[in-house]
Image (cartoon, rainbow, N blue to C red; front, top):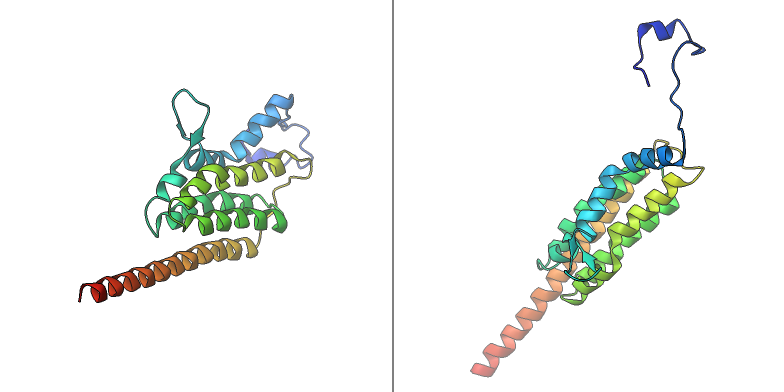
Length: 190
């Protein structure tokens, strides 16, 4: 498509201006592919970038970050919010954005449980699920880009706040458990 020029202002009907048309389905897929480039890369990085040799099993940085005690899930969720933010900018309906946020919160909540959370993240792949929700919407006939307003930002902040709260709760529980074990150990030594 030719760039806009001052001459285009004289031709409001666009009779002399070239119009970009999509030639076939491959052109449409390529356009959709470009529209969700950041989300695609982020979901691949967090959920699929590492392949176990001689298998088709893939995982990404999300379960690895989850190995960092009481903070790794927060870091992974912060990266995952890029997908949620792009979905909000693309104008996804509030129900779909809520499902995406729920995927992230579920992954982070189970992720606070040592080992089990990492296995769950390895299997659940919340970022890939969220990218599929975004891509499905973009490929649908009604997938128009509309501004999301303020509520997507509030939803994203709510997801991040919930994940932080879950991590703080996990820190408190772990600290209480360690304190209890320590006091029992000291009491048994005396």
